[in-house]
Structures are given as structure tokens and as C-alpha cells.
Amino acid sequence: MSISLSSDDFTEVGGSLKTRTVFNINEDMEIWGGGISIITKLPCGNELTVASSDIFCEGTLKRGEYVRSRDLIISRRVVPSIPDKVSYTLRASLSVKRPKTREEELRIQSEKPIKLLARVTAEETPVSMNIKGMSFSLDKDTFKPGEEVKLNYSTQNVRTMIVNLIHESNIQCACPQYRTICVHVKRQPKEKVLSVEERNPGSGFVTIRIPGYAEPSYNYLWEPPEVTYWSLIFGAYSRWYLEVECVKASGESIKFQIPINVVTEKKTEEKIFEESMKELKPLSKPLDPHSII
Image (cartoon, rainbow, N blue to C red):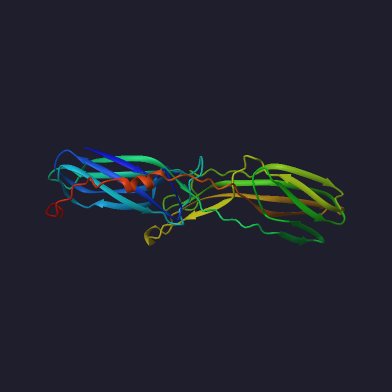
């Protein structure tokens, strides 16, 4: 007995994944069922299924080869693949009954890694703010790695001004077992990437360059639609912002944040499997309708 699984190596969140599964059955057998799913592992090690489709229900499979094609729909709520944080596996499985019992004798599986790509849309927006008699502005709030951020300012009676480029990122996970504080999600301190200091600033501008290796901005949060799993959430975030601290001549310290977005060029990947699906000829044996309960 064996299962062969093929699909595209990637698909977009909010789209679908075309799959083709071949079940080679070398003898008649009773089964509990079979299907295909996309899974990820939570920080605690438990598996989370984000998309699935049944292929066989409980009944009898005759000896032979069964070929099944399925389109797995990926919800827009699903967290995309994130290097070193979130990865996905496509799995096909078949649960075989132990003869004359209600127990599972064995489970046959086939797996392959896949990528779920984000549909990123970010529009550039100017930023302007006034606080305690000071004004600050950005011509835009969206930048690419390697690009300079230009912060315009106008201040009065300010002794020092410090502008820090800050990055925060982590996994978000909550479940009935660990609640909102998961012991498997380690708290990550914010990273001060770059810093610029101006003395007696007056008016002018400062520039800070986004590192070429910068992780893009994102904020994803997945919740299952089933009411029975209302307390389960899974997500990830990557936030960039300018942390500005001004110390006035009086000694008063004023600190605030200006959020910014970091975006990368969208990669175009060719879907080879989608084309090959059109060339496949039906190889499957039909399931005997009298053998299915």
C-alpha cells in the first residue's frame, strides 16, 4: 500500500491549491476514511489544520489504484508562510481498520512541504503630527529595505532629540490548554536597529536607512470559524516604527512612536503543476458503490 502526492509548491492565501493523490491498494481492506489537508505546527508542537478535504468515507476499498484531484481552498484568515516562524505541510492520509474491530490498525500518509504566500497591498501615505509645540512629518510611511526614511521636524526649546528605528516581531498563539499566555511562545524584546541623535535640533530633518535584510511588516491573526474552538487563535506580527524622544531645556522628556511599513518586491513564481494537471489522463478505478457504507 502506498500514497503518492503531488501539487504546486506554493499558493496564495485566499486562493486555492490544486492537488493530485494516487492511492495504490494491494488488497481489499476496510477503512475509516481518507483525505488531504494542509497543516502547521503550533509553538507547543500540536498540529493545526487550516484546510482539508475528504476523499474516502468509511467503507471498503477494493484492490487497485485510485486517483483523486482536489482543490483546497485557503481562507484569507490563514497566516502565510514566514521563514523560521510558520511553515506548512500538505498531507494525504488513509486510515485502515483493524479487521472485525472498531479500531484503527494503521494510518498511511504522504507529505510534502508547501508555501502559502501573502497577498500584500500597501499604499504610501504621508504622516504629519504635532505634539507639545513640536511638529514632525514623513512624506510617506511605506519603505523598501535599503531605502532612507526622512523625518522632517520643527522644535522649540529642545535640548536633545533621539530617533530610534525599532523592530518587533513574534508569534501569537492562544488555545484552551494554555489560554492567552502560552509558555511555548518566548517573549521577544524589541530590537533597536539604528539610532540618530541631534542636539539643539531647531528645525530640519534626519534620515535613517532601512537595513537591506529587513523583514517586511505584517500582522496576521487566524481564528477558526467553528464555535467549539472559539478560544484558539494563531498569528504573527512584524512591526516597524520610529521611536522619537525629545528632552526639553526644562528637563521634560517627551517620547512617542511613528509607525512605518516595510515592504519587499513581490516575487513571481511559476505554477508548473497547474499546467501539467491539464495533460493528465484519468487513471482511477471507480469505487464500488455497494462497498461503501
